[in-house]
Image (cartoon, rainbow, N blue to C red):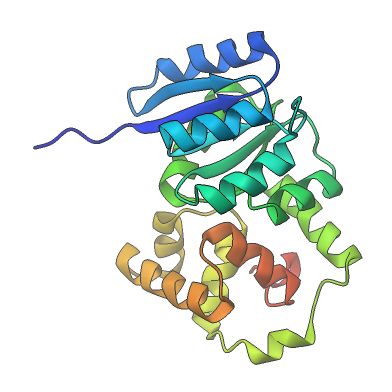
Length: 223
């Protein structure tokens, strides 16, 4: 039986000690492999194109090219690399800007080490990582922009698909969604593919953001 392929990770942060600390933490994990480090946004973009990592841990405050612009270009030029923002900024404006730029997830630098490792593994497997506190800020940002839209009436999601989308917005994995709906993981994946097609999105984060923007899901409707 072939060994499970490791999740390759690139770390982009302008603080050398922080990068080295994250690298030391991740190198102790058998499922993860740090393939490179970058100290600024331009270098991060160049290394993503060269190394094609599964995930880039990307800080927002970077010299030469900030993390938001780097995320935008990585999303455009290297769509197979998942962008996970790891930042000390947790306000709505930064979260909104990062997700709109194409980031697949957003985590706080204040996260305990063990939680960061678990979050990174889940993110690499599921393709989305927006913890509930950050999701709440994202929702508030969308509401300030005009949140719910009449366009929602044109999106023909079934009740089950809306529930899947709501559970997705809570940060649940496919396995957790399957348990909640009492169905198989394969069925959940089929529902997600249908949701992606109907919402005209390509990944889980975009689906959640658009679902909130259209008023299809919200904290009050997640039950």
